Image (tube, rainbow, N blue to C red):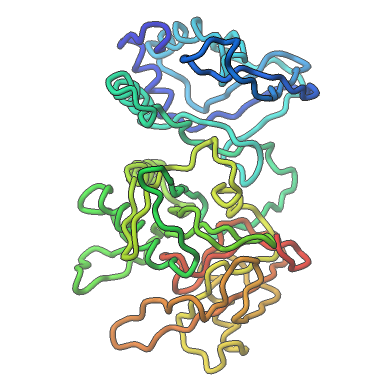
Length: 433
């Protein structure tokens, strides 16, 4: 729309489209071209092309057996929106990259044939950028600021993404607990403000800062599904909500022999039964968070977008499925077992998984040592907050094996809403992953 003149009369069509859920994608098999390295001049306006250094780049490409690709939405646009979409599609010459030339039109039916169907929202698959409510306003506003200042900071980000994959053929897919989606914020270090580095021991202070920042940017009064406080709650007499609400977790570099456990970012975890409207409210609140203030320093943060490649900051790292899981932050007991590693403690862990919506594990191991590389021992973590007049809660590391695959994110125990009891899948042999 912008390249064609940015007519205001066409904007409602794009605003209608961004309100819809991500589409399914239908396409025929493809053949991948062998990668060939090309040397490309650095895009520097201050020197002539012949004086610019050349750097090696590769340009992945593939050829479809049939060139038609379908994006399928569940909704049908009204007639006035359809007319405007037709005008926009007629002038659309590329998709994604400027070298990906396309011809686009609205289709009423899909031609018969063996088409691969990708559905959005998969636990693993190919990451695809998607529109979302408010994206048009965001792009227009950032473009206006960039034209005024010329500062690169105002260039629009890549936006939100989702994983797309073919539906599982097995009738028995992985079991999912009460949580489903992650909104990831990464720490941003610049020349002006690098921000201190820290590790998993700082989980409680970082997640408390994240929760406070999200609540500050949420609608006021803060909804129960964000605050976790029941109606009638006050600062002096907080009442815990019994309804599903947000959880806040640290994202640390763990799981390989060279992992040091340093925090690269944080995430807000959404319950699986949130409505679309609730998810949108949460997204807007989290996207407005640009700084986290902890007692020991502050971070600049931003949404981890489609260009993020670090495994720790990819949602699928934490939402993948597996039968063997172990804690990255210690499990917090809501009772006081006589033996922290005995049968009573194991039963408490089993019940915690049941409250989370998962089956009881077939095997449970409890220890102060972690099973993931880069994770500190359980005694190195500060105790979880205790209720007034109550003794300090116990915590330890847990490894749990299930009979069927379980899909993440898995967070269990009394500390699940503020970063403790966060699990990550292990390979079935129990070693690092």
